[in-house]
Length: 145
Image (cartoon, rainbow, N blue to C red):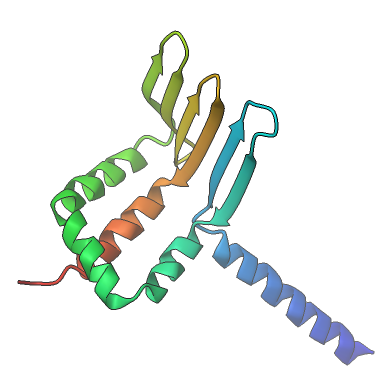
């Protein structure tokens, strides 16, 4: 009986530590709601770590092509992400007109983009750390000419 308790404790600890690792960077969430009859309602959450892990499965040729296309922007993206880490809560953009509202802010270390109009509402949240990981990986895989 004691051995079963130890096995259960070991498995529980493994599951908890795995969950902590998977969610240590946070969660990327995308919520889209269409405001019409039979409109779509999409709510998608994925651990930010999945982006870093997923980049390992992208075919090398396609990854190099993406890195080549993004190369001119990578230094700016990296610097922007590093600066955004200094401001865990900041409002960046807030634009409203007669029918649309767009709000971009840093909330608790995540870039939050909210776009609302009569037809749909879109909310996207991405940890700033994910931007750094993606830009670093793209830069590391940029082919040298």
